[in-house]
Image 1 (cartoon, one colour):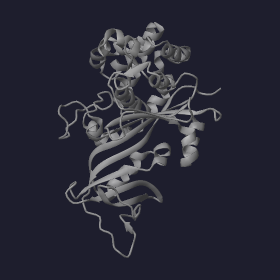
Image 2 (cartoon, rainbow, N blue to C red):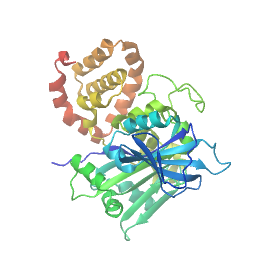
Image 3 (spheres, rainbow, N blue to C red):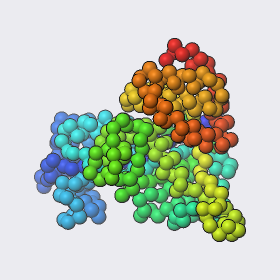
Image 4 (cartoon, one colour):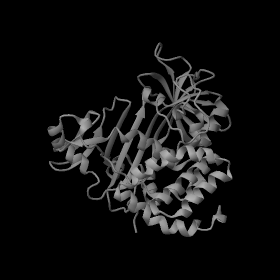
Length: 393
């Protein structure tokens, strides 16, 4: 049996840093030994901003690319960019290598300045219907973004993008298996195999790119327990991309899903053009999300949450909220009791009480989607058998 639900992964990570010492290369050597573990290897490439690019080798693996020595007047001379190599976003714990590199190079974290979050699902009938509805003029986007569609032939869309590539946010869709046949990223095929994807089916990728000033504005309160103190932050909310601590959960499925859904929800809202002709105002039309994703509820499995959560309080929050979600979907009291017991055991009943209204609204909104309800229902009996005895927790 193949998995026909969506999986999520980080596909790009760029980190702005401040170098403690400027990097100067000896003309006789293309390598700089930072420590026994870390070596910088000159690439002889440059960008429009940075004059030098180095491959960062850590324990024999080229984990990062370092862009440094900016053109005069564009940035402070100590400003640099660390870019994670794509392969290791799928196969390695990037945070572990980041810590090792920082320890040896002694640079300062500034912010996470760009990420791509990729959602992949086997391409089944209807998943890309919104694209064809758009090009046929049946729907339009509420936010009025720039939209680009490339056709494989007169009837088939090969590539679809909402938003300009130059903007701080855009989403694109395409067949990832076909792209891999050109890029030869075999490690992504291994990633699909591990997630039980049918090798005979196309993989429909929905990839959101976030960068620029937007990274100073994204708020995500559910994953870290203290407010942002970064000088770019306008309030004391938690701005994840301005905090170094976020790197410890940057590859966590639930963190990525939270950011992805938050940043695509309003961005991809659509309305029917036929209704717009009658009402002449988009805000009076019924609005729906162009992408109704069914992330596998397996990402919420207790073992997954326990394994990926970076802090005890994070585990408690995720488990308590998940039990409440099960309660509302199944109408089984035991789940709500477990939600309360988990929070109470860690002195977090006030926190749970304050969250309940928003939880209930959020979960009820999700359950209006019959596909979402069907997905979570398929796991209900399994969870009930696992958690019917509170002693398990």
